[in-house]
Length: 220
Image (cartoon, rainbow, N blue to C red; front, side):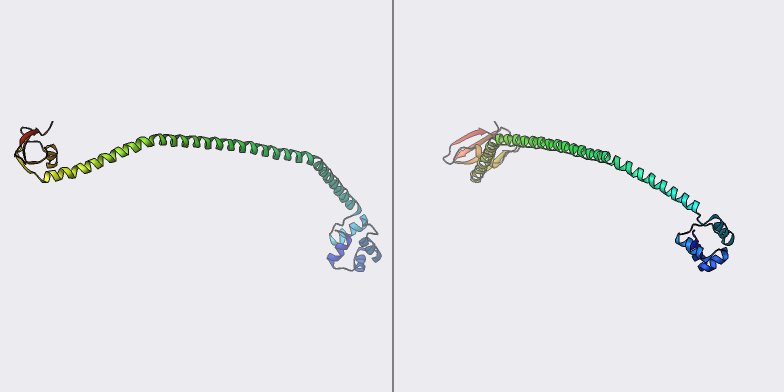
């Protein structure tokens, strides 16, 4: 604390403070303006009267030296930091550069991997298409044959039914085995009007419209 801070704190005028300290009023003004230094005698009187320790010249000087020393140390630290800065910047730049290079390498690897996968996929698709093209004629042929067989059966079945509808079928012996009228009609000669089914003999005995007779085996 300096003399002016003390006076302000105590709420005293320069003359009132001077009176308490036993010094001239002008001395107070000079000390506050820095034209006069606070002597040890005055500092001791202040301590005695107010119980306050003033900043003496020695104390101020010591504080100034400490501040100067700290300032110098700070300046040296700043200087060192400035000197180190280019190296740090260079190291940081190199780190960034290395990272960019590494990322480019990884990107190239990823692109190459994707390209290989794409080529493999295309090759596999081409192989599947080729196989499908090769199988297509066989499948088409089989489908045509199957359709033709269905058509043939579809045509034969009504014809057999129509032929069977004109017959008077008489089963003479119910001893095992079975045969449909359509199957019987398919085995008979044209113009057959009557048929006698002998399952026990495995025979069909037929009579034509003109009276001609004959027989045929039911199952070969």
